[in-house]
Length: 82
View 1 (tube, helix red, strand yellow):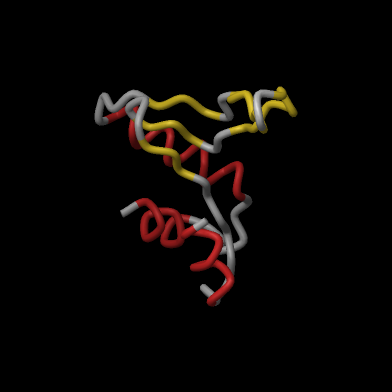
View 2 (view 1 turned 60 degrees about the vertical axis):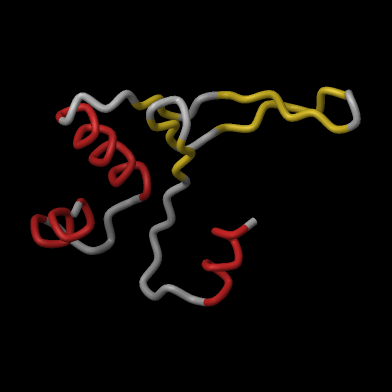
């Protein structure tokens, strides 16, 4: 949905931040709650390490991390699954 709209309306070299803003706008237009770059504490065995930034948190339940690539490779699929 968003990908086709963005590539039709502008250059394919759009930056990740532009896609993030466009996707956020599309979700807001549909009245779907979304938080951008929300900080989440990262802990390991009870120790606070640092904050991890979520790309988008949609509806308080779904984490979306955007990738902007020319070609989808196997490494991208592996990153999606981890």
